[in-house]
Image (cartoon, rainbow, N blue to C red; front, side, top):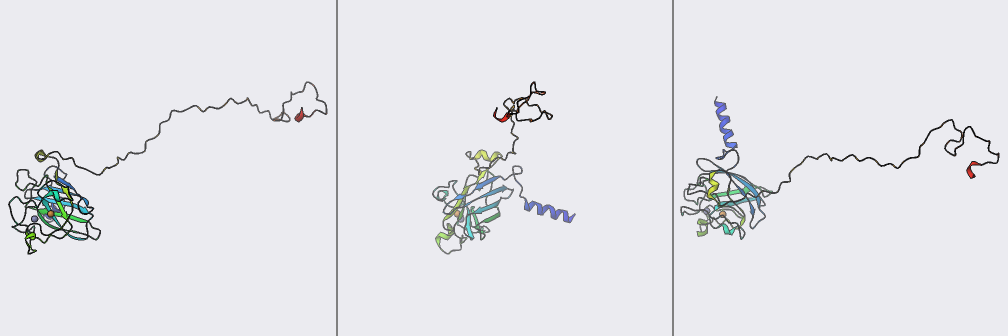
Length: 248
Ligand code: CU
Ligand code: ZN
């Protein structure tokens, strides 16, 4: 019984529950900012906060500041997303700090291929549309540099964490359920997937094969000189000895 309970709790961690059925409650398609960033994130709403899972490509190896920003705009190399999402007027901080922006999700680490695999649970943001910390329609930004988490010892550290340029960003697009009614319609852009069709048999109308009329051909094996010329058989008269059938 104890083992069974452990199994259930492990399964719950591996596969986050979704508020609206089996899929994610929001998705983010990452687009380039100052770097050729791509990737996709899936966000799951739970009672206490949000789980963010997915990957971001096109980064430099190492740590990158990762935040929810206040505006759902991506223009001007992601600068149009504005500052960190900060509904309570706090200073910038680390995810585990009490004094932090709601959008402060710390750093994510990209591997030697420049890919950051993200699996974050955070309880200062929400996908509940009635919450002050609702992040639907806002932007997620991933930075070129490391977020100093408010420990940089300068004023900028308490605003941005000195995380540098915005390598990429994406809109938090709520999918399904009633919460999407709180947002302007935002179609989810997916990369074009060609539809696989099995090869279809080609249906041809059978065409009669046209063959020119062939002269009647009668095999007459017992006729001498068969195929060279025709002789009446039996001959009505005997040809003269000089008769040459090839030059006649
Ligand atoms: Cu940021
Ligand atoms: Zn911040």
